[in-house]
Image 1 (cartoon, rainbow, N blue to C red):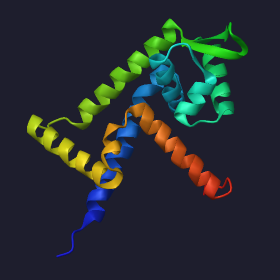
Image 2 (cartoon, helix red, strand yellow):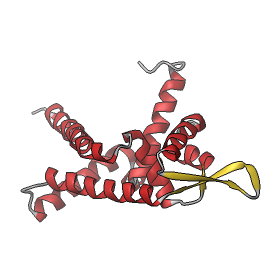
Image 3 (cartoon, rainbow, N blue to C red):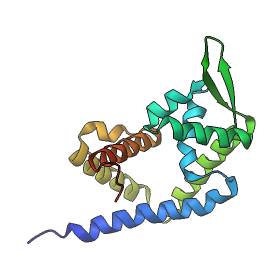
Length: 172
């Protein structure tokens, strides 16, 4: 008997899409664009980092980082300070508003996940966790199990850059 993976894979994708959709509705109150959250999280975890470091670590173009950080600075979410050792380098830190947005976003994601896993027992969650870990290991080996939200974002951006390069810049 042939295994029907299609329905399971489809349900897996649907869960991912609806989790994102649900979280986006919740995040509207934060008045930050979804693509800015990885940048904010990176700065939160690495205060005083440079825009070049952000671009490199998240696989985002330096121009995109410059535009995003400029907008976030105008909104009072982050501050830039010229590095005293290199006048061409900006050090980036979050303001209190920026820190509160990151902390609130993390709470909103925990709440989103709580809704998604409503009515699951601890045993069911542990079983699901084991299955998902095995799926990741089957596709990516053990290193795939260690992706954090930030490294996952960087990995997705890296894949996108490679695809664009392979297609001559075409994103179709």
